[in-house]
Length: 183
Image (tube, rainbow, N blue to C red; front, side, top):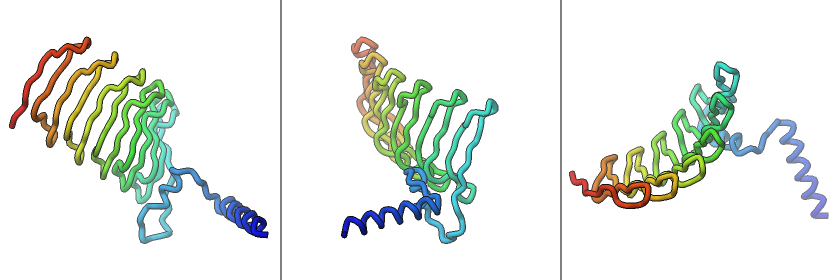
C-alpha cells in the first residue's frame, strides 16, 4: 500500500510540474535563488545575436541585470563561456572554451572579481598555467607552461605585483633567467 502512495505522490508532482511548465535544469533552478521582495518580478530569458544570426549570448535578466546561468558563443556557434551572474556581476565557477570545444580556463568569481585557483589549458588540453587570485588581484605562486608540458615560468605575486624569487625557462627546461623581486 505504501508503494501506491509514493507512486501517486510522484505522479502528482510530475503533473504539477507539467501544468506550471517547471523545468528542472540547473540554470533554471539557480534563478529561483534570486533575492527579491517583489514576487511579481520574474527573470526574463533573453538571447543576443551576431550580425550573421548566430547566438552571441543567452541567459536571464532580472531588473535589466544578468542573473543566473549564462552562455556566450563565438560567431561560429562554438560555446566560449558558461557561468553564473548575480546582479550583473560574474559569480561562482566559470568555464571558458577554445574554438575547438576544449576548456581554455576555469576558475571562480566573487562579485565580478577573480578569486582562488585558476587553471588555463592550451587547445590540445595541455596545461598552460596555474594562477591564484584574491579579490581580482594576482596573489600567491603562479606557474606557466609551454605547449610541450615544460615549465615556462614560476613567480610569486602579492597584491598584483611580483614578489620574491622567480624563474623563467627555455622550452627545453633549462633556466633562462632567475631573480628576486623586492619592494
